[in-house]
Image (cartoon, rainbow, N blue to C red; front, top):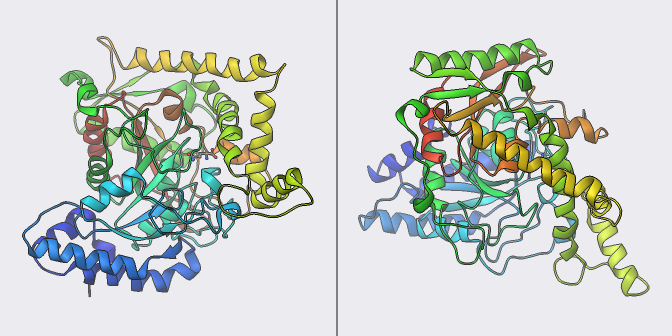
Length: 480
Ligand code: GLN
């Protein structure tokens, strides 16, 4: 029996190379545990039993032929807004219930070339809108640490699968925190790459100026492996760029200096969350880091800016789902009613809320007051970050807690969208700025007698992923 709970991508790859087990055995073990756990978790919307085993056999052949690869034969879960050829791609929405992908997203082709095995498609908030995976048309995902609580979102299916040991790695998307926040709530590692580092070709659009494909796994080293595997310049995505040419180089002093926006953190965080954050900082200090206070005056506006810009972009992103081109078509009395029915019944409540919000902030008469104002403040936030990441006082990373609290109860925030939006207070900034960010498990706190995980977030300069991984590895392993 393979002990999946002790396995990481790195360990599994070494065991596959040493012929301790085959990829088929590894995938079978994952599938059988998934059959046991998924009915209560709802982490996977679908397990790709047949194709996963075929891919595993293919990987075994490559291993036998002497090929070595850090992802060869490794089972991963894929958020269901990333296209996998011939599979249903629902985006967590009813409107795409019947939509089958006709091509692979670039991140999928990259992983396929390297021999990764796609275990299944994971649950998400509809099109990535939400912080709890409760906005899925296919039912909520549960947190493996406490089934009465949310796993976070929107990539909650991916992080729940990792925490339940029914995937070794996972892909998600991160527009405002959707890989980092659920990673924190499930006790796994989740990252958002620099804007433009990873191709978005074949990924359902949500907030074109903010979104990236994020990588998730149980350790920082595994997330690094996934990131290196999917990072690429892709002519099919015009925001993707040549990473090597832009790679960030830090001085040795900067690489060992971490900044904390103290004022921003004085927001009435629970005392055990503060203590947990301080313990991670202490851990970095013990490892030779200088921890300094920094000022980011405009960061207070980040959440408001995000919830103006993102709905504006969403209102155009979601215009393509009209019942004609993709997925579900619900006929009405005439063409207009066809659209109204398909969209009215196809989209969930949060999607409709954001379409209306977005249309409002972009409308004539309000455009300058909201959308343009938010864009201007976005630039001020970007300048704040540029300042702290450059010059003689430059920090190598900015540290914050990933969330203000551990996982909340299912149903607790569904009727209070503003409370739900506050979940993203620490994560949206990296998307606004376009810099890379990662959440590392930082131990647990007690809620109603259950130990629940928290995350420690690091944000690094653009194209500074290597620097970010190095610091994250030093922060990793806090078990307070
Ligand atoms: N929770 C955020 C939102 O609802 C983040 C979404 C995301 O990153 N995809 O918009």
